Length: 106
Length: 159
Image (cartoon, rainbow over all chains, first blue to last red):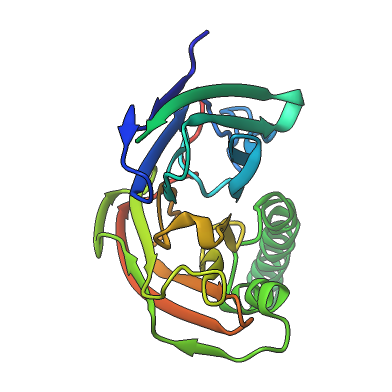
């Protein structure tokens, strides 16, 4: 299931600040909702997001139930060299999902 | 003769009062505690410790009037250079009245180039949102915005 959407520029000049947009398809169940019969719906959220640029961690986020469903996160980085961005989401109930994108730096 | 109706009414009121008390307990225990200004302050203390939090540098962009609290776009930017000597280490976002005071922690570094993040959040009520940035010299800067929410998140029941 292609549940991740990543937006990274294909090409960048060396030293350019680029924006990275990520969206992961996930319910982000808060654990504070009840069914009509009064049972609590158990929490099921993504708790952590990491982005690595050629293996080096450049961005990390801790997520809480207050993050909306299908977590959308954008951030910036400096394009230093051609290579690969690796994205990793981990969460409750053993959720783990990865995605990657490559960039050409001139 | 006047004793009888009075005493039955007293009995009835006593029973009704007791029923209310017994009825109230499960409601109180089942409802999740809202994050109050006190828990907000505690959550902020967890991050900043004893350090002083100054107002400024941080810009928190969020619509002041939100129709649907289930998804509210939010951008936090910090007016600070991003060099190895002087940069933003992390950005922390808190709320006042959701069931939990934390919204998210975002860790950056000098390689970010620009200290700016965006995401979409949930808001359970009209409340204050606080963003705090930690700089490389371990000083803390903050901004807060009051948001009015017409349709709250988290409260709807599943069918």
